[in-house]
Length: 434
Image (cartoon, rainbow, N blue to C red; front, side, top):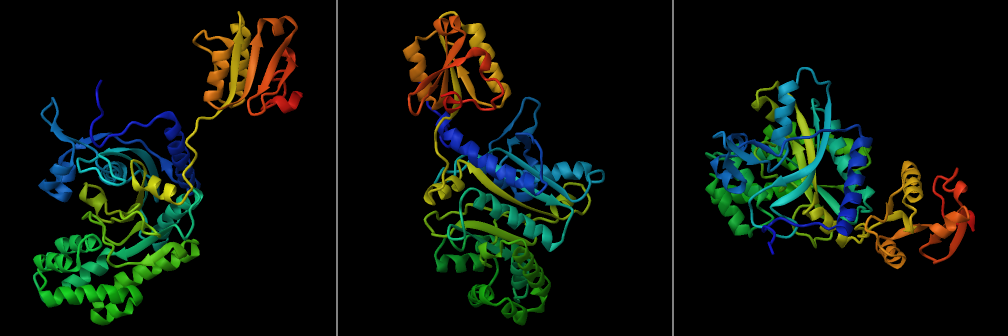
């Protein structure tokens, strides 16, 4: 017997039913905001990721040379792909461009809580608007997805920051600072001890005193952004933008979910403005549930026009979102549901098939026997798939012009004239004929 590959998981029908309920909810939320679904390839040129993140990124990719001698990689994230797609047709696409996609991704990293090597993620992006309203709408759609799944303000928080605040603060010091590395250090600040955090800032070019001052500034800025402006006027545009986004979030009805957290940096280099990460408000899940932010330069870097962009990417399978829903007690029931099972007794396939077709035409989930099983075996199977109603099509009943309806919860049965079933009923059950 073969074993599955480490970091990949099998999902059986009952569990998949719960995942499907989650996916349907968040996709319906995105559609309600006018986001349109797209499909994207599972493979891209490896240089698309190397150019943005450096050669070291290859260690985290499923990258290889294909038979045509091309260096390719299974997609580890969607943002570069949608940036490429927008760049290819930027002139003809009406603005703003609002897209979403739900699909698998692959990263070769050590599996841990809520992180697998294959994971399913939904991406929601707005291209073509630099207004704070666009950032606020992304926050709103993310919050509405979570509340639509049954969570509330006691269950999650959005930790909101601004990359340009971090960048301008770092550049204000009299030091040769590698801003990119320093921001990466900020991104790790919640995961390492204080001394290690300061050490990473020093490695990026700050002195010990400057590193400690920078950390203190971020802490003070979480309470009062004016403290940062007092330190350097260069942060004022970013502070104004962040404040405008939070004001818009209040109008969108999601400010209560947002906490100012300047230590939130997002590790990817392409982020340019407001960024945020969603966390479990009770702290039981240590890793971020998902994150997002603004990436205004990425389209241009792929050969397209200068086009602002902002997005969010909640994981939906093999991720931390299911862990949060389970912790909060709102994970959908892992169970199969079936509206009807059409049970055949004797040579009744033609009538049973017709009834099954008519019920399916009304939009119901209908199963019938395809294995030649006995009456008892069919009834047991109907119970195992949680059939609500069993339609018994037997030779003796048909001779009298009838079929039998069985309510599976109560076990009660009633005979129904064949020419009255399903008749004008959209969802005929035992109660309609008892």
